Image 1 (spheres, rainbow, N blue to C red):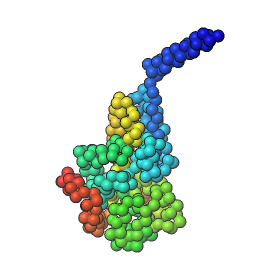
Image 2 (image 1 turned 30 degrees about the horizontal axis):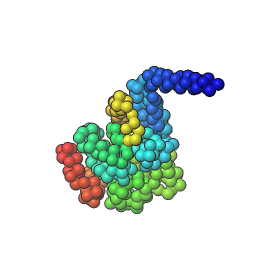
Image 3 (image 1 turned 120 degrees about the horizontal axis):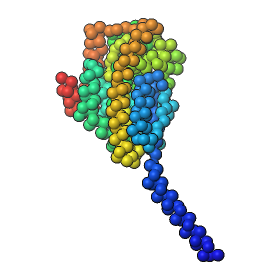
Image 4 (image 1 turned 180 degrees about the horizontal axis):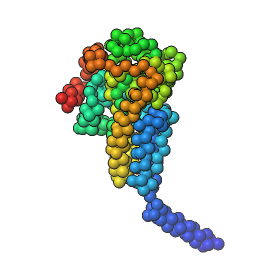
Length: 332
């Protein structure tokens, strides 16, 4: 009887070993990416994420599978970044402003009126300076892949038409939870109010805030025109998105799949910018049908630029004077 039991155990162990060996040789391990973003499923960011998903799933022959959650379903930008740090979520794409508490150098991109044109932003972000700042995310458990585009931020409100800094005096303007944004609006005489993006619509609806600032795409797709009357093309900040992945997850990816992910990230960056720039022009035209949209003259925009110049000196030490000078030199 004892010999029979030993024989059966030997067979089972041999079978298990053969099964494990067959699994190693015949079935590659599958890796899952859960991606979250704040904007809804009509945005250029969502379309670019879907494009990224298609690229990585096809490029990996199904070894990477991906799920996308839009409209802040997984939390706000900070909550999702913290989930990446813990290894509980794999990917997100926040604006640079909420990244500043993690990596102060990202604050350089929040300086008002830094990039005159899209091409200026592309050159800095995709060049040595932008890559150096991206690489700093690895020190806080995040892997920066590429820069996407949120776009130039513009002001809306429910009080009056805004064409000069004097027009925003005393106005309650929602901003991101970023000290530089708060101080920039204070220098213009506004009463800035930081809050999470998911709370914004109801805050405007209930009169908790008078206005907010975001790219045209966000303003249109989030139906802000239902609770806002006036819009101004201030273009006061160019806002990049940062496509990032959990460093823990990245370190566990095989080298060939890391290449698949990075290649897809670069292609999705170009797709995102193409779509975002096309859509923002269309959204501005559509908003003119439902809001009073003020297109500022160069002289009017110059008044805003002059009003916020003190912010550069105020934040030079926190960001790094050398970094600011490098960016300004590159823009020349």
